[in-house]
Length: 397
Ligand SMILES: [Zn+2]
Image 1 (cartoon, rainbow, N blue to C red):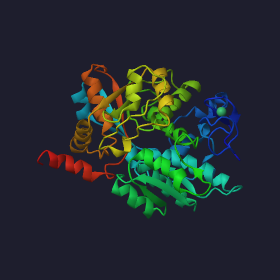
Image 2 (image 1 turned 135 degrees about the horizontal axis):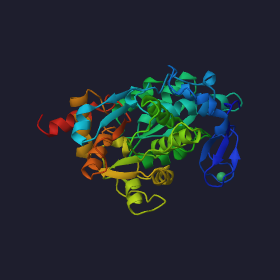
Image 3 (image 1 turned 90 degrees about the horizontal axis):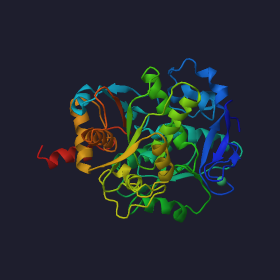
Image 4 (image 1 turned 45 degrees about the horizontal axis):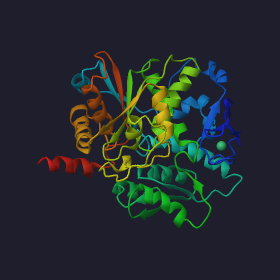
């Protein structure tokens, strides 16, 4: 398969074996996750002028596995960085900016990874039978997968829990994807993929495809470009499967490798307090995740009790000097509503975890008064306006 110049293979995070990009999923030797590797010396010069150029995240093709000319792309990425001055004042920091990933083609950061994953799938489809593509998802990733699979005419199957948002279920079908609604929660939807698909399939599951966290890393590239080559003092991010935390840390680390920045900023992973397996593991000093026994949060997109990338996220947080924070559903909803009312930004329910987490961190005195704090809004407010509205109604509004 044709790959970009600097790409040097997919390395297994467990056994270290390096495979080429013909491998579609996990390590054939041990079943470990695969992670794209690059020859950083080969790209350093290409990055002398570091800025987006209208091609979305593919402007950064020098550090992606495939060239932009082969991309399955709907101009994902290059999302705006929106100043939130009232929030900055309330948190007592110099500047708060919201990286608004709701402005992606299907309204989430997941489009970055799906663009890469479907680019790989469409190349694999030239020599192998890859259909159907399949994944389990709380909702957003299914919508994104259906959209990008449709763009290259490949059949996709999304397994979603019954409590998945209506907008996700509707849009999976609108994009032409097939869908199975599974009773229960996300883990039941994951089990159902193998139980119900009576055929071989090509997985788009996070960390089975090597490309979802890989796409997420472009968010770090854009943040540094948006901040004129500087790194922020803190990046606060909602955490579910771990792919965004892992991707962001990798992206910043690669910018250090190519000599564009000196350090990886501290990342803060935020989870709802009634489904916070990454937070609990970090607080116990563990290297691996204990599945959350009774997940119960209204933030369905973050209700991931046994995150595939949990251990990798813990290691990423440790290496950048970051931390975790758990917040209540009420605080998440109130923060999403406040962003809409005070900053004009339509933050989805899951995205509300970022400002809620930032509030909590500010109260703990974790920020300085001249800090630049980045909040990542992971999804559009249009995903779940009913949940935000019912939060207001619960307050008598
Ligand atoms: Zn391996």
